[in-house]
Image (tube, rainbow over all chains, first blue to last red; front, side, top):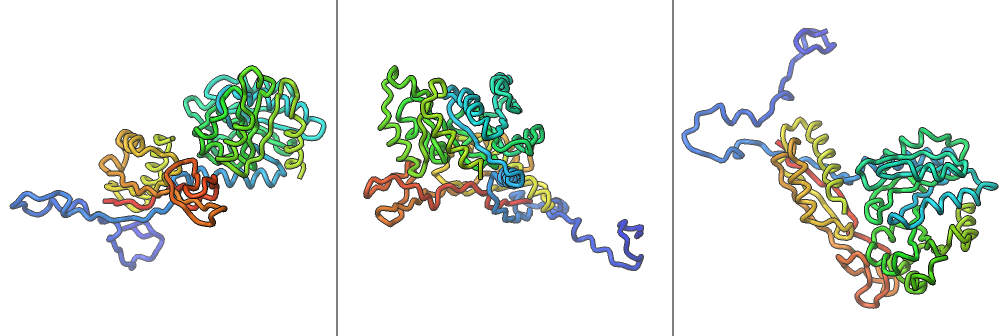
Length: 259
Length: 113
């Protein structure tokens, strides 16, 4: 080994130290006769980056996607405002799908494992992510959560995102479909007020239809507004409580997950 | 939107790039952000001013190029520009969903010392 720089080459090689030299220090080694802008002598270099801001999340999301595909697992990212009925819908869906599909669930909340506990009563494997302060799930959290579930024993994975109609739309988790819930109590103009989230959706599920009459739910206007923001969205109308519309929703999932 | 999270990601990428380039400081960070992402300029700048403290970018300025939304109307068969998140064609009123630009969120370059 060379004693001068520690490399493995023979002793007679040339040591070139240019690479250790930083230009910023030298400006203060000569005599100053006049005041000058300290930046004059500092060499500024422009470095190209050309990277998406969320490249790190996207990279992990793609890795998740590959992992799910390798296990023949269909994955749905379920998002909505807090209180739209995600947990109730998931629990009921799992029960109805049980003869045909094995479902696992990852739940995201800021605190508690109350949602996970409720879904666990169906017998499905559930993993709860508590995000602390973070208002959305990201690919890294999902990658970690997935290690706690036996993917080989599942056909369908539902990810119940944090209740939030804004932030989750920006974060790819590696899912196959994005489902946005909108309950009849939320008002028909929700899609117009939150375009990014509704545009992000592959399917919009209108929930709690059993309450429609009590809140003067305007069905036509709601559907019109959803399609204004996202003409390609599939739309489901259901009530997990009464069972109305649950068959069409379950058929949709069976159709995808069965492939 | 998620300006604090965006800035955290920006600083993370910028510092890593600066370190591998042998820099001791960053003076400018250039971003390209589409107006259809919903990012608010003031919030982004504020988040940057706060979060850059203690990083290689503590003296850096943030230079953002905002890209207008460009949406293709399938009825008119033409593109229209918009900053409105709803993307409704100003000519025929049809909602457009084919967004061709305006969703960018990129770190373009850094000035390092």
